[in-house]
Image (tube, rainbow, N blue to C red; front, side, top):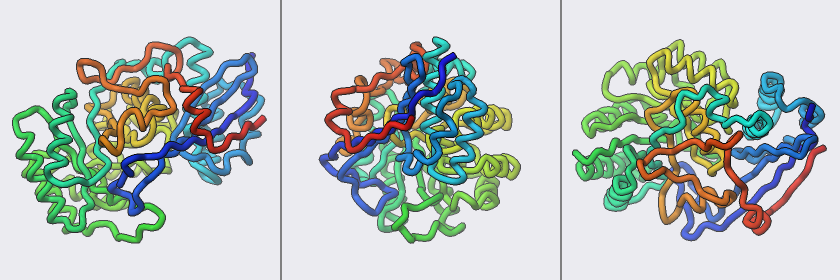
Length: 376
């Protein structure tokens, strides 16, 4: 029987040119960092994960070392404990699932249920942009066979956001591209003290979204305002989405009990982890809601959430971060030999190889290395 022999954590950085002015961050991003965790077993096999910086994980590593990597329920409980006391540890669980897939010779999406091996992606913008810039992004999305695109709100005035929405909705009308809006009111970056929208503002956005034929609005209220989001749903204007950073499984239970969301968006490398989210996905789908993970990060996290969405039968779309020139698949997936891209039919297709089925670009990782530690 193999055991977990070592946990390797490495941090890498690339420069971004032009800088990436994320809609949710007051500080423009001049660099993109990726923390990669590699689980080594005693037989020389590895599994990888990525998604959070894992600062402070080292003090808890002894809870995993020397144990059978295949005992995923036990490891999930330990990682849930670590999540309470320390960093979000869920990239470690993804690496364990990857390793177990390698051991068993099974692709991750099959391990998670195998409902399908492909999910249509939606092109997810990260910047704000002018009306013409967002319309041009929509043209690119249509040309690349995306069935949907998400735009961001957060301009200096709500009126400016609504003008962009109206312009883009008119621009894509009848061209087969669904639109979503990320309102980004569920949480804030540490230095951002802007309060979330009022109920009246959220209703105004929902009305505009309905008029524009928007598929869903994401986080129009603070993430804890479950009753407010249920009330927004009850207006019957537009679907309400959220849950990407929700940390406590009991809060997801509350969302289902209250009926606060039409679209659940937990990210497996940020919150709750794969084992918990497989169960949640089935309960969400059984309730009649949609399960479509958030995936704003790098290609490793995207591959994990693709396997989760496909394996459990989620959808109808999966988030695909893309906002050139500031954010391209090559930049996002710089740590991989091959960036994740939709196929010729516009679908994201799960690898048939064991585990995640992605390969690290060792030379690129060496060139971009900032720090590395090996826990034994």
